Image (tube, rainbow, N blue to C red; front, top):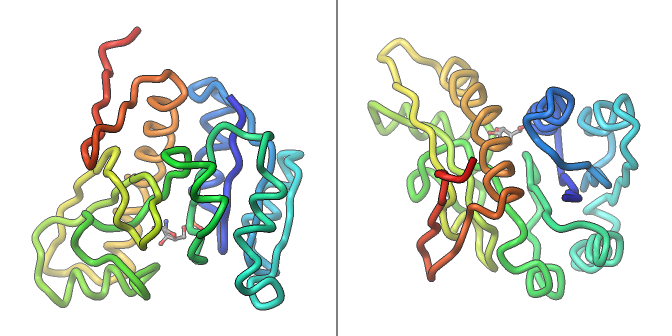
Length: 205
Ligand code: GRF
């Protein structure tokens, strides 16, 4: 199985995928890491692992970003993983990779998601609202933001003394397990989509 990982920042989720490939938990190869902005530390993580990297500055590419990514990845990978990727994808890329692009979001969708809801903002809103649990969601990417069929979710408690930072750290620890798990199920062919429902046949050896 060949995958590409798209990033915009630190790449701790990318690092988790790399680590899980190294341990053999994930039987796949990362053919490319693409960042939509300069200076993303995740690019350094990819280079350290010998992965081909591309920096497509979203300010330069604008509306052409998705087509450029499609040009790079078409016929090259089976699965595209958005790991802290902040641009909205559209056009041929979404059509040709239907149900083959996944994203991880740091909340229990449909709470605290959608346009502008990313990074620390998500945790600020969760604490402000006073939820007792939050978590992360891995979902297929469709033509809207954080709305595609949900593959898996992991839950974490929210404590009264939590700050957005302490909550982010707790959620990120779960993300670093949830994303590799979702990729592993997909690689094993254990995931089927029926409308909005994703069925995981995790009885396979
Ligand atoms: C984090 O907020 C994570 O929840 C979300 O993107 C942000 C950056 O993650 N998926 P990473 O460290 O760049 O993987």
